[in-house]
Length: 361
Ligand SMILES: Nc1ncnc2c1ncn2[C@@H]1O[C@H](COP(=O)(O)OP(=O)(O)OP(=O)(O)O)[C@@H](O)[C@H]1O
Ligand SMILES: [Mg+2]
Image (cartoon, rainbow, N blue to C red):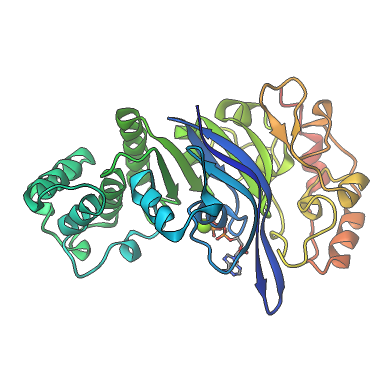
């Protein structure tokens, strides 16, 4: 069953410098119980799309539709939205310190989250809070329930956030960069925890991150975003092993210590474009070692990748060309970049590296 359907979502912010086109024609679906990973560099529109889905983007110009559980999220009243947030959709934000109130004990904050939507006594809510803290593996939950946020480590505060989010057994949990502030071991534990929670309460999840390694571990389906658009979308296995889009391959190449990292993949050079002055055609073309003439003129939309089931890529590169050497005129690329007022893109040593790129079957 489709729980969330985002259709042609566009979000822009009018500013004194011009219109920031943060999200441009995004479409995807999340099935009940499924995990979607959304990956992309900083500024690619991941958080803006998540916030828009929750009706949390005042001041933005929004078109398209977001349907959650049969309801049009972009047409609901603030009151209706508030009811859905916290009851049916929960969100874990990047920074747990800013999301937790510093002056209240964590147990009190969890109890308030519970009592805002369910009619239970104070004592019952406290009991539930302790159970939730135990569920998210916080040691000595009956004592920690009385702690203030600053008395807990970063990893524990994230667990408290998860406990709060899970308090109401939401149908959908959106976790925006839930692990950025944490070290690798704690990150891994937290991801395992989210995955096991998900099995237990049968909720769908959207996990937003710039780290492909994180989504590799838990996502069923992955959407890669670039400059407010979907670059590639597939089930996690396909995305990792039959990668099509040069941007995705660049992300894989920059995974530290990954087995996938090798000379077969080209890391991404240069900076993401300005969202006020987007490049013509494919927004990735100034940084793409495979850019063709067409890529500078036409904006590719998501297309089915030949031979791949439910594998979509917004790239004109033919399947058989993926991974093989493509003649690139770097001077032409630099010219295109200069013309758009972008930082000139240099691709040092790219010709040599490209020779080694075999077809990724
Ligand atoms: N209220 C706003 N007004 C103007 N521009 C905005 C506003 N909110 C976001 N943006 C811009 O929209 C773009 C997308 O931002 P978003 O926060 O979605 O990026 P992100 O992919 O979540 O990045 P990160 O990985 O850093 O969290 C950015 O260029 C950002 O500066
Ligand atoms: Mg973000």
